Image (cartoon, rainbow, N blue to C red; front, side, top):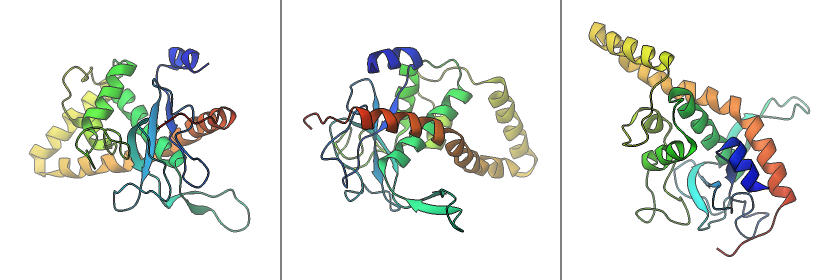
Length: 212
């Protein structure tokens, strides 16, 4: 099943598992062709109270006390939630933004871009806590990655041109760069529902635990 899914949509990103409910990496994140995501806390450190660790971890992202929309019960409109499902949704958002900026990238190139631009933490290189590192949205969108640069979309190229012009006119390009962070936050919201619902549902149906 997962092979067919990967063949169809090319890229699957999933939560690695939560320590409160999972003794090890869960499927589909444990499959070799799936990007497994662990959780870090507000300090940027692996959160062992939230996330399991595994050789299947590829990337990490914030997953501790993240503010998100509540279920609408009572007067609450927002709440804080912890879990690797939150982390995987964030990585999915970054992947969507990268694909939007570089539409010619294939799945392997997109994954390579996310890995190479990730912020390495823990043991140098890949490890069981952070994988290749903490996903870096700005780095993934702007850094030069040989073999995974692709061709920017027309809108992205136009924005880059305008940004350079603004810099020469008085430094407002710096402000434009800072707004990338705001755009990223918006991208997370758009992608969270589709990716989280589908992957959480699949993982709960196939919750078997591999060694490691």
